[in-house]
Image (spheres, rainbow, N blue to C red):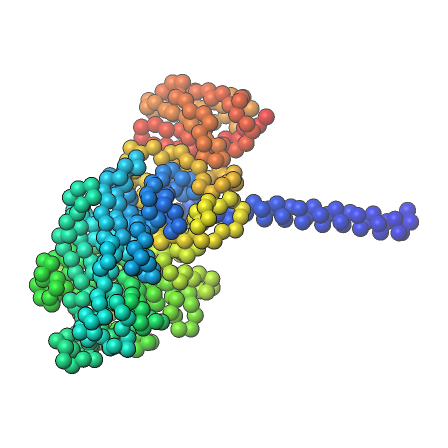
Length: 567
């Protein structure tokens, strides 16, 4: 064969090979998920369900760890902003009523709703008028009441009279108060306790004012003229964005975003005592019991002492979990001096057996060092300037919500990512799998273990992905079924064409239910066992070829076996 023909033939083969490579690469890339479930590890992850309310949607979603929507709740309102699953299966959700007087404040809400599992509106309480508006976070309490963060507007004259530097004063000032609401009817409630920043101010600007004093000598009070925000004339001053309640201590934890601090106050006071600096279990009335993150705010430190940089989701780690009693914080990092990155930080406050916080005179509140922290190996690759949250899980892992991008992940104690998910619900609707997405922010995501009381007796074994045109997946959660690591059940033949045989354990007389689940999470066959012990036959002759999960359920447990159907 002439050399020229050999070269042409070789070039043709190279072109075919390159075309094949490009085709395979393009198709492999096309199958990489862009929304919904991004990663699922069969080991080391926490079983349970994740609750979240997309910022631009009126729907609240509950998904399993395979990214399947197992339940949802509808509201008239977009989030305002947090949502909780309650022990009775209802959700407690803040909604945004679009109060025009507080529209410029990030996280505006205005209404609190309790919505039953079946979608029934059980309670609706409005906190929105010309003088106040609920915002950001609420918190269900063990006694059935609800804590809420509320802006309260003060006039220019009131703010000046309270000692604010006139050069730092807007026409209206938004201060913060915490209210405890007892539901009394379908749309009514009674404020049974409250606390206000307004009652605990100190300033060193106006000597004629009664709240004049040395800032460093009164760390339990809030400096009226500490204005760290970019716009000193902004009406919104503190920007509280999360609240938590500790029943054992009877204390409330508040995240003060603009102050780059967390605050703890005494809830055991009466409302009257909460306006003063005496009374209550800890004897300090409504003054701050503890503060941490930015000692510049009370003149006991410098910028090098600062630890928080615009934080969210500060809360006590619940009893029974790893590091219980410590405080976990999503440290957004938007105002870090040298490099902007986010971290999850845990601190151990200096607290005695009686719930009192100890500190040295003229020094910042301890601790000086973090108890635990997580940041990405390349720090700047993990950065969420706003929203976001972190939750310690029962197995010791940590669930992280990077709010602006609607990205959730679960990390192990050694920082291994074992689960990743991206919210597919955006400002323009539900995204198609494989497409790019923006405007899919989520304020916070919370995981509820499979044994959570509010899920007991609920039908949450079926579901499908939220996103449109989902890719096929064989992911099976332990809430749907946990893979059987034993030989108690024999499945054959596998692969199978027509009839699948299942041999059940001889020593177990409980009835069994078989469910064959396809890659979308849909049950295609559901039948009872032929006998309590021995063999059962499942006819799969009409089922399309593919990979399936066989879920076997009895009174005591649920397991899953993988099955391949061939035609």
